[in-house]
Image (cartoon, rainbow, N blue to C red; front, side, top):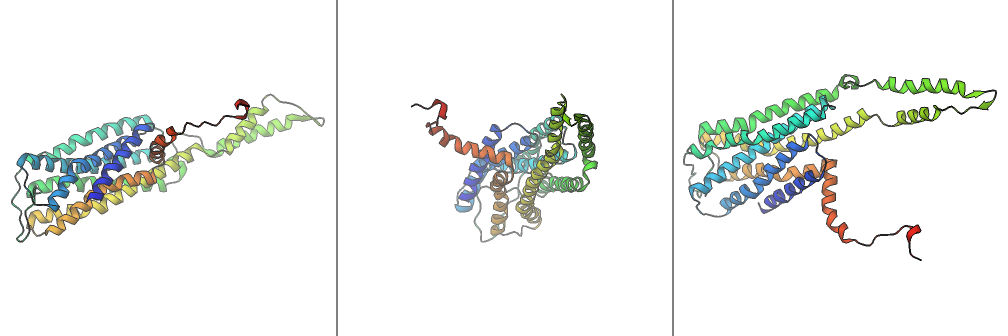
Length: 336
């Protein structure tokens, strides 16, 4: 529990610092929302969650209500941020050049995640939870709300609906990536036409560049050579597509971790609200497996996102590089 809490705090703080250092991209807004939600989980939810599992104590109604509300709010915001992140990746694959419009929508949806999560979390304060004590087990300091109506309401909007949206989005992303490149081209020239134009120019120039065995200097010859060298460089659309594929792999890993970590809890919670048949050890493992998702998300950023990885490396090396004041001089300015 201490390792999960410390990793959640340190990792998400590092990701937020890294996102502040890099240039804004459409995907950074839902990423920042996700890191902020996971950071709040580590700061306000996990300490009490660990204490209530390890010690026997009682808290007043206000503290328990705040803790329960933050628990549902932050976990829901984290899941909805993943859903927003999947939507942004789908837009990035299908319309890669509409960057400004994607950034506006991503910023709007990342902001809307929090009021929606608040609407899902606030009823837990006002809806009473039935007493849930299994014989032979010690009562917890703050119990989870197992009201049947609220459980099915919260699990639908916190997990099942976002998970269905994410699965649909990633299925469409895979279909878009599987289609041929001309279908996914966005108002661009065909690569064959781009390559053939400089070849025709070179043929004309070569025919007029030599006459009587002498080489004539043509003013436009350098420009033609520059065009040919530009053609040899990788196509910008291919480079953009490679970046989108790398980013999509990152989000697929996030979604896989999300399903692996949260599915047991959201299957256990409705079952227990109906029959009260889940033992304390089941609650412990399923709940903390879901919390582990908040600690694993930053590791996925650092391992799979080049932009965030470079910013994290710069953040970690800034302090050490600033200590080195020994600057090497070039040969022309060295002292004798």
